[in-house]
Image (cartoon, rainbow, N blue to C red; front, side):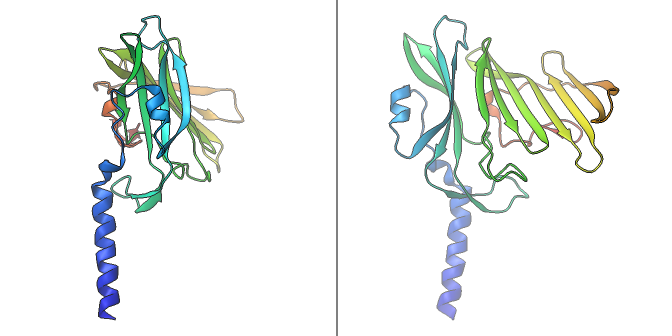
Length: 226
């Protein structure tokens, strides 16, 4: 019995320690080319988008990668310890006519089981008019983030959150404009055309893609998180 207890105890300590220090599971893709990333047997390309991000006339790429193996992760202070397949977002920009990874974030992209009532969540990735967009569609809500290239980083310029209350039918649309420092609220009901609009100013420095932590950890105004 004592041996079993010790075994369980050491297992728990190992899992917790591994979870808190598992940055080593993420490859460092900075400086790597596209073919090198695709050749990494431990990771697969989940989403891929192409377009000119830094207005140099050449095609750039953004990739969302997913680990082929699952690991234990505690994704927030109140989250349970769960076994997930980690995800990475990388941005490859042209450098001396060669595409290389210049941006990498290991935390920001939601995992497959973080979709609430949805059994599986996978973001959509697109590049349009020089802007990088990450979009999530949930059961009764959606979330998007839009980034623009600025001084060697992809910096957020806008975000949008929408949701419908299942019991009442009321809806809320929140549009964050980081260039104006404004949050535009649109409130209404799915059965009515009339909506209420209000604007809340905010004074917060826009984050770069590299600076983002897990989703919904960044409070813009009281109780409104991205």
